[in-house]
Image (tube, rainbow over all chains, first blue to last red; front, side, top):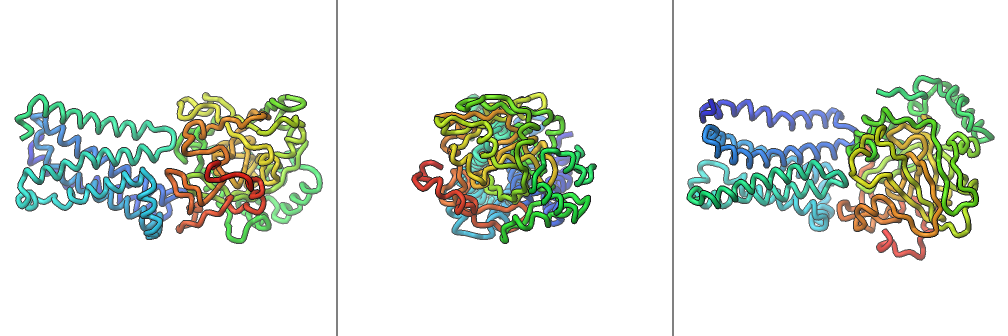
Length: 201
Length: 305
């Protein structure tokens, strides 16, 4: 049931499912149906979606340790690239819609406000991941180096969740849940390394 | 959805019913309203135009009542609108205590029968760098203060929001320390700009905006304008305020709108006026510099933010 073939078959459906929210929000934004403060709403939705997808890629790796779910890993690249897609939309909403390309202001904002600094670094770290996500690149870099680069997903996830955590003013429940999930997923990896070092290669 | 009394009652009847409106100002208001008989203020905001600054445009009733920070009903902007249906703002009493001649508990109706309700169109600037323009109805806080005769030792006024977790679902969670508290220096409280608001757009104050009575201090960040007030205390020392207690490095007692003093999370130099696409420059004291700057001439505003 959970064969590589079936996971590959589910890709087009998954593709549309993950793409759909961005199209919906764009439509709602243009037609004025994103509420009273549409730019803020758009930015929040895009950012949250990106964070969730980042966490999902980490989860997929963990799930692929289960023998029967081993092939699920074929979905990871697409979801990772979608995470990058949503981060890009989130970041460009901030630059273009929120601050209207006022670069001086934006640079100040990135330097001075820790939560924006976290978000920005997280975005920067995602760029090498996204740009080395083809089979060809894996071949060119060699699997070992490629894998090393892709360890960047850990700081990406941590910084992205911190970005969210610092942003929230009082009720931190939601960002804490995301942070908790990320920590659990990381702990699982550390545990695996310690107990079965031969798998770490 | 909750239907407001004023939505089903013709506006003129509604005004007449509210007996506290009296005196020449009230008749002037009625005259204005008669000219647009049976119109809600929302559908005919032109009656506010004389109070409106030329650079400002009123925000709509919908904007003002569906996008709120009122954590007693939840932390999302939509929550106060969605979760405040069970809140009962009548009957209502306000306890006045501390350094006053006659500490007492007033029925709200009694206070309202002794003051003049007037229209005040104010900009409201949230610390989160968004703003609105709101047509309030209310009366000067100074009128109430004069009524209760504070002692000369009273230097500060503290305000307390109602605590009713069964009607205010947000209070069932300890997001902040309930009840919400705010405070002003006596001269700030006596400033003619400072009002206690009981309505907006000619409606009784909607639950999500702080029914039945709330403070409005237009030159300070929105969180100073405490909602659903049940207690007012006169003190000789600076009172604790909710946000300052929760995060003193982010929120100060004064919380004056100031584009030159940044919040660690938001630059305060610009703001998004709800309904507008491009950001605006934030004005010193939210544009009320002329009226209030003198209050702070001896104060280092970067230190006392």
